[in-house]
Length: 580
Image (tube, rainbow, N blue to C red; front, top):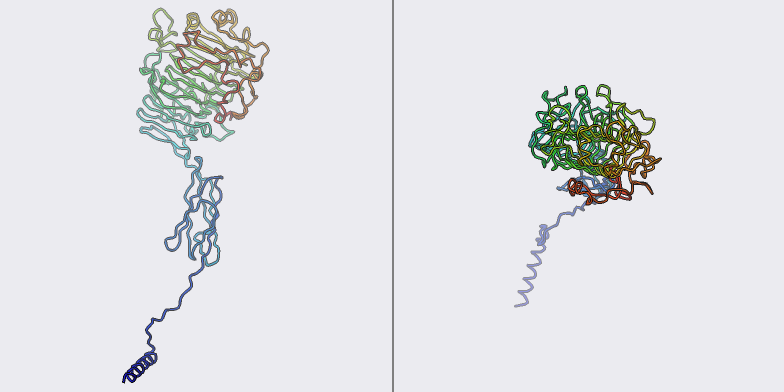
């Protein structure tokens, strides 16, 4: 009985299975056919045109939200599909690079390679015109060309910041264009030796001339020794944007005033005459205070003075002047600043731009005045040229470690020019550890009795200079009976001026080419066995007047001139010696 049931059950089960099979049924689902995944392809991206070590900014996008950044030439594995390549602008060392892309979008197939090229090239530099007034803080950057159109004023309360490597040109269609930093404003121009800030002509190299534009004028709030409303020379000229009343610089009261920072800055081909006999200077410091920083600064191929100080107390270090149309360094009107390490080189006199003015009749190395013109008020019992005595505002500048080299033999010098240092009009001051060479009409001249009075009472002090190859009497002095700067007068005042008999300018320095081409072609370091490697006033302790006047800003040196034997060649890398 039991056996029968089991067989019947098996029979039913087999029958059901057969019936299900006959109907196409099954206990397991039937899987669809499997489609194989396509093989990847390759996208080759070639990046070119950037300087070595600079990365590109390339983005590759494609199917399925694919995105990958590429910085240089590379090949990436990607799924088949369409890929788009984009490249952002790259900036390196203040140079901008734009990209041109070829082959995008690129279609990538399985086991195949598609190619896209990204070619970078230097982007055109945009130009921005500066005109009128700058009334709020503003920054100028090296990735933009700036054009000064007419007189441009940085107003009181505003700071104009100029980044390293920035170039600013004077508009040659608006003659006399210049930048005025007004009282209460600041200019912060922080260049570097590799990337100086340059103010220059708008014209191309080889076509530039002195007087192509106006120059840089900074007006501070320090004191000067002229009274009344005295304006910056040329500031009322017929120039676009000029104030007919001119820019007043007298009346200041804060000797510590801060007008900003000039560091690694050049001014080239400036000095336009906005009126007859009223030229702007390359650098004009009008009543600028001692809170201002000026160092590593050059004036090149200007029509008028390269550095001129009207009163004020601003100090300076590492100043270079090349091919001036008038004086290399000019101080007056109660200027009491301290300056150390200065170079003035004159190898010829350049022809100004037609209509810009004329080369001065009396270009010198130094030309320093006490006071001259309206507003020079005579102190009790003295000449008006000695203005400032009663309130401590005699002209009392300090120049230490200067090298002044005049034009070589055969160069025509304007009739009243060609003197290394002209001191006149009641000036005082200190001249220490300098070299004066190759000036055809003399090394030093003391022009009048008012300045001689300062010399005799020890407020005009000359110490430890070296003269060579100068004209004038006794190797570089005023002739007997002419003016007050005879060799005997300086000897009597213990000036210690050494005259190198038969010594040439070129023999004093490591390298002094007839026509320098760059900072490396010049080496102002004393040559081997040069007499200027020694003989400096190496301590100020013996002369308390000098020590008290220079404080800690001026350091004594064992050498004379602007460069230490074997020392840092501080003029290299940022100075320029173009003539046009």
